[in-house]
Length: 194
Image (tube, rainbow, N blue to C red; front, side):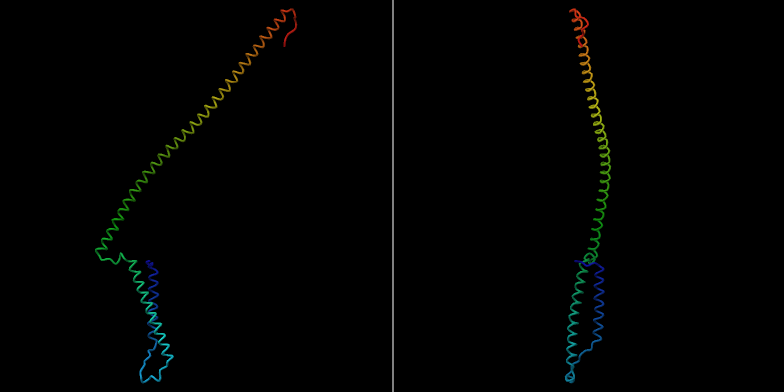
C-alpha cells in the first residue's frame, strides 16, 4: 500500500534524525583497545557496557536499513509512472490525453442528451397537465350532467305525480257531481256526499 507523501516525508525526517543521533553517539563513545600489554588493566564492566552498546547500535543499524528499504519500496510503488523511460512516459502521457479527450467528448454528448431529455420531459409535463385538466373538466361535466338528469327526473316524477294528483282530484270532483246528481234525481234533496 503506497504511503501518502506527507507520511513519507515524516518517516524520512524521523530516520534522518535517528541517523544523526546515532552517528553523534558513535563519536562520543570510546573505542576499547585491547592490547596484550594492558590486559591486566582492562575494565570488564566497561568492556561489557561497550559490547552491549555495540550490539544495540548494530540492531539499530539493521532497523534503519530495513526502514530505508521499506521507504524505497513504498516510493517506487507510489511513483511507478514517474520511473519510466522517456519514450514510455510520452506514450503514457499521450494515452492519458486520449482518455481525457474521450471523456470530454462523452461528457459533451451526455450533456447534449440530457438537455434534449429535459426538453422532452418539459413537453411531456405540459401534455400531462393539459390531459389532467381535460380529465377534471370531463369529470365535472359528467357530474353536472348527472345532476341535471337527476333534477329532470325528479321534476318529471313530480310533474307526473302532480298530473296523477290532478287526475284524481278531477275524478273525485266528477264522482261527487255524479253522486250529487244521482241523489238529487232520487228525490232526496239537500244531501250531499262529502
